[in-house]
Amino acid sequence: MRIRLAVFLALVFLIPMITPTELSPIREATAESNCDGGEFVTPNWNKTVERHAKVPNVKDFENDYAKNKRNRDRDNDDDEEQDDDEEIIYEGPEEEWMSFGFDNELSLLRDDFQTTMLIGNDAVGTLTVNLDHERRTTICVTIETTNNSYNPSADVYLMTDTQYDRYTAAYDVDHGAWGGRSYEAELNEISPEWRSFNIAGWQTFRDSHQYEDIKEVSFSVSLDGPEISSGLFGGDTNQYFNIVIDNTNNSHSGDALPETTIAAYVSVVSEERSTILPNWTVSIVCCGLMIATMVIPILMNKRYMEAGLSLTSENQQLDKGLVPSLEQTENN
Image (tube, rainbow, N blue to C red; front, top):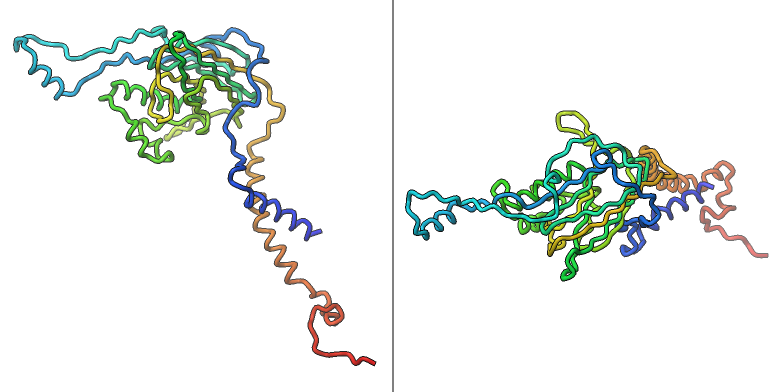
């Protein structure tokens, strides 16, 4: 019985080692089902869903050298003051209130809803929700054009509040805030594991929910528990989730390039989960595998060392052929 158990456990650990790398168990995070079966209702704005936008409405401040060079080329009088700040005029479909910050306490998302977001060229549209860890949420996004002359694509991201803050900071920097510079070339030279230390090194939820240069996508999210962010000096805060539709050229090298105003059709389906395993089951499984890895060699060595010892007291080693002998029997 012990030998069978040892062989079974050995196979369990050897099979993954000899499996080809092409058969990796890690798959792209996509939904197992789409959103067609949802019972959709009108979103309860600012109660369960918030609408945000990032638009390029910051000023483009030129450096001093460019200002001085332009001033030298002018024929104006020295006493005449000129306004050197050039403000970018953005004419997009977003309303002004979408760019304001919100501090609403959102209820857990338990209803299905659909909505359409018009997102201008070089802008970002965001839906903020409070996901329920006891439910499975499926998000479907379809990108269409408002101008038949284009066939645009966009980027879809899922981020927590903390990740979204870094993303919006990178957007502001790339559009003129805090001196304004592009981090794309610099970011491409940094290893992915170190990019979070860069202002443009924002990440998505679980590093997997980023779908770039797409026209349609659906994906699912199941949380292990409430998403909580712990502060450096204490204090825990619940994290909301942001469904981001990116119609700008962000700091990622593989993202879609903006062409025109887009219409993003977003469907969100929330359904009950049939089985929810507690978090400690992961620790038990991992620790059990590690303990089994150490126990198998010990058991096999013990069986090997004990082989034949039970026959020592009865002097049956020769009869059983466990000890070789040079004696030969006489043939009559």
